[in-house]
Image 1: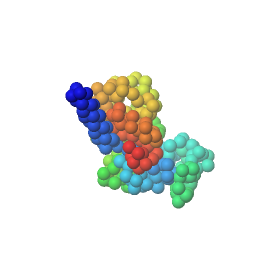
Image 2: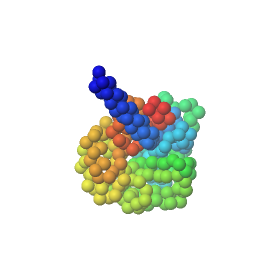
Image 3: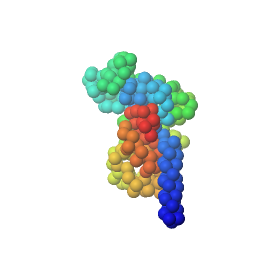
Image 4: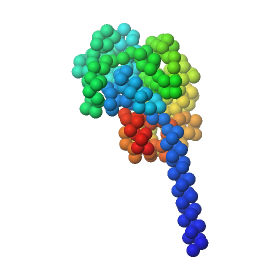
Length: 264
């Protein structure tokens, strides 16, 4: 009988320790608002970024591209058609034209954001609270870097920033420009991270930002052994978020930062 009681108590203690560990991990995780709080406000707009701060997101992510007259703007796609209904190739279009386009609302967006425009990165940099981070995804090649550096140097005065990019050469060049700023290689596939692991380490990148479905224990072990932090995207399911936390990711990118954090 004593043996049974002891075994039961030991199991309870182990379960409590595991719960405490998971709870601590959940508290340490950073929630990154994907393209701002894009579930409620149009993506990559001043409204979505500001709303991310209001909702308590630890960070807000945005995408940057270069116009024909070398302005660094927030936009995800190479063409404005899907977002605005008007057909413009970003790199072939001036800021004067792009600045007058209105972003269409998604089904989940609130009506009060119906007149949002495409913003400049410099406008967004000025909104970062001291205790938050803006995660800047570079959607072009290295050609944007001189103009991006000028904007950051002139307009970044508060909070923190980091850079992410799918193009390895571009993010390596970004790290060379800004060795003190965290830079992460983006990948949709586990194999891409493993294939480029040595280059990522040699380039002093801070980590990788990987599609959640590609993350497993083996990848986490490989990255941790190299001193690389692992972030994940884009998670809107609490069950998936819990799995990512258990695996040990450092940040979760989500369209619904406040809601997802409350579920965890």
